[in-house]
Amino acid sequence: MSQPAHISKLGVPDPATLDDDLKAIWAKCVEKLGFVPNVYSAYSLKPQRLRHFMAMYNDIMLAPSGLSKLEREMVAVVVSSANRCYYCLVAHGAAVRALSGDAQLGEMMVLNYRVAALDARQRAMLDFAWKMTTTPWLIEDADRAALRDVGLSAEDLFDLAETVAFFNLSNRMASATDMMPNAEYHGMQR
Image (cartoon, rainbow, N blue to C red):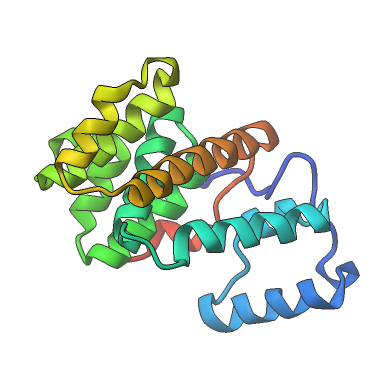
């Protein structure tokens, strides 16, 4: 059985009607990935918001950081698991599989990160991501100290918190719009 065929229950604009800068991004996505991520199509309903979303995503997920790209993707998946965000679990689960070269790790992140053989740093980061997503009002000095104890700097803590916060935002947008992941993600790195 296939997932629903829509991209977003709010609809998406015809790509031919997008501004030239967005058409160029669409072409680059097709060239590099073979498809345009549905999150871009969904966000193109509000083109300026899409630009801001892409800029923030690129800064959080791709800019230099004490957190590796894989660690940031693992955080994205753990947040999405706590929120049961179908779109992000599929898309970022595929990214974890690709970056780690380990399909089982991707599945463990999606279903229950606690079963994975993680190092102390990763475990502390993902425990923080889970707590910040499910009970943010309970974050306290002991949580930050636990992250410092495994080597995270103040800048790393900031990057971790911002990654968690960003994916809580994107999960809620995906849920509110009933955004569907690209079918291609399901088969990646299996």
